[in-house]
Image (cartoon, rainbow, N blue to C red):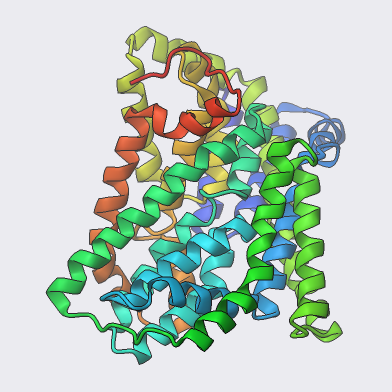
Length: 436
């Protein structure tokens, strides 16, 4: 790289370490690079941002954020939690299983781990603590169950991956279904193990009237992911149009069916979703400018040449990349890795014959694990903030979940058929024979 590029990256990491938002740090350091090299800042900005504003797919991101805010503000998530309690609350450690099932259900509507943690997460922690679970375990489980959100479709990280790598969003969504369910089963396995060791409580089975009431109340909300995903895979709507349908149906249910939503609530939803969208948009804008610089510096080509000289097998390459993501995920923002590091690696991924859908799904799973990995796990701090439980208490209970999640990640990486089975069933043809 040129000296200007080194200066850019040094400034970026320095400003990020000092607390500057990731998007602002990327934009500021990129501007310094352009100033040093004498580039036309306006021209580069217009070329880069045209990719942001002309992308129809990226419109799905604010729509899914808006949908998640509606679910949380209108208390639809509370009704989904009651339905999950109906399904698995009667088993030993029932509320812990309810926590996981509620995250699976909510994942079909939000596409965001942060939305899952900020909404159902607080309710789940409060109810578990009242039932006798330790605060640290309750918060740790709510933290790790939230990572299911962006794996089971819809998924905001998968949309961004599809945009930067030109990979089908629909096949990425399909590829995330089985891994997401396996993540839930793995966490339930941990709960079963700990239930026997710690004698977790069991919830009373619901009466017939309670079961009918909970099902009837939750059923309209449960139709949202069915309508959305059915529309995508039938070809009736694109992922972006499906996001709009999801937002509209959620708004109608909140206003007309549940009647738990006012115009004041709508104002709060618009403010919060606009704020969250602004953060994502600034980060994407900064990433696009930095990607332009990375391409100008020919970093992907040089990286590919260096990796080719190492003569790595696909299996060793995947191991190196996943270890890299796990280490970086403990310190760096997920969007940074997704928008900057992934495009640098993609030429080598394609060269080695690694399927982009398989790589994308496993990369997103890896990055979601980074959200709960100390010392900088974003979800840990979010749950600590909304629940009032100390980070140290949560971290103490996290390790067994992290061990299981990383073990499952390795299975997904080296058994591509788990990820690719559903996409292939729907007509997808992998790049080459799956790499194992």
